[in-house]
Image (cartoon, rainbow, N blue to C red; front, side, top):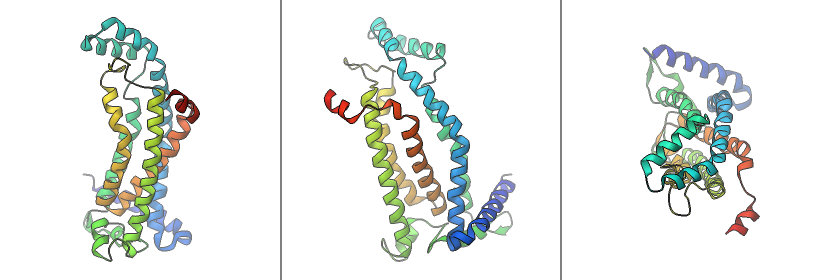
Length: 255
């Protein structure tokens, strides 16, 4: 049922690679994947802007949520219901930031399938013959380690990707910690300002580092999508949420 879709995407990848070949030569298919990722992120950008507005609106509800917390005391069920009603009345969704990420998943799985399959329909998958430098786009880090080790020709491609991911993850971690310090979701008494969200946000800054594992195990083509999309997200969020961060000096004074 999905074979026509995979065939159409394979043809798109071939056409993009052909256009980029005069500039990128043997790495043209890898460049086409990066370009495809950028186009997907550009298409989703309006939703990212909408999600940013929603999260900023949610931050402005903190005083009203504090009043509800005082009113309901330790009755967590009543507090949660009141907070959800407040969100509904103000047309703010606590999960608004999840939609852009969810809409990107089909593109990721499409790349994953294409570069994991030996055939597309009844034909051999010609995309598997393409590589980034000497690393096949259908291979993964384990394959690279088996052909020259960490610092072999293939392994160095992954070393470069890991360095980029680690740098972006560190940037995201520091930025999210600053944002959480500026808009805490836990009251001084220990109650969640938004029930359940504080526990989630303690773990969220670490999620960027999980991308290292993803890049290591998926086909290189899908890893390029992940690295490009993650880097785009870091830059996009730094721009969209720039007014939600306190100055470093303000944090130091507060500490």
